Image 1 (cartoon, rainbow, N blue to C red):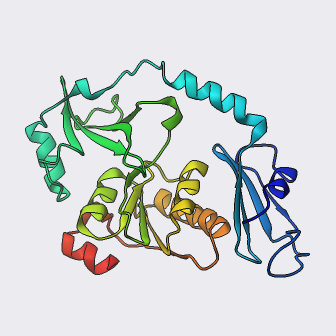
Image 2 (cartoon, rainbow, N blue to C red; image 1 turned 30 degrees about the horizontal axis):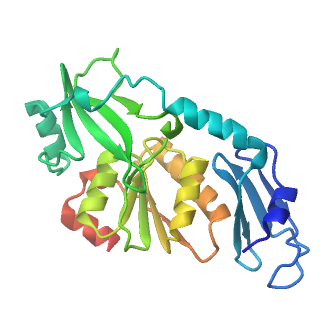
Length: 268
């Protein structure tokens, strides 16, 4: 474990910023190539040494009072979307889900939305806590966004959706919810939907804490997806232990478009 005092003494100033310093007292020997990486995230300070492979964590004491105030404020946020908005899935909603081989009877993940021709996709964190819902609008209107995302707490804003299996050492990162759902239910691997094409520091922290041996990045087969996959790879490769196997899948299909057999052939 990297000395907490060393982490605090070299802490970056801003969230997302990372510094490289010499690891004083490195177990692998003298470090004069600045192999110790320290990064400030919204959860605290995380560190990793690329010389001895030790890790470290420290609370950012300068931000502790701000974090506590934010936690208290999150409890009183008025939710604009909640479980009371959910209902049975419409016929068109079931058709949309079946198009991607999804179980329309899985109420834990899929519901309708009262008064709207939409499907609500329930978002869960890595600990299976409820994060919120992403609503897929099924009406082809340019004035209405295809997706709107509602989080139950302000602290969860921007969090990815997880389908976490405690026994696996492989994580598949997808761009959209249905793709992550399909991977989670049709393979033995954990999956995570970014709900975008970028990886947040909070998500990176959660990934690091799971100690995955293999991480597969499988985003959409378009320009945005390919650029996003490259950036996610760079971020993971830079921060995770060097022995983590990180792979980009560049296929002409999204995971949700594959049959169960195809997913198992690609991923197992």
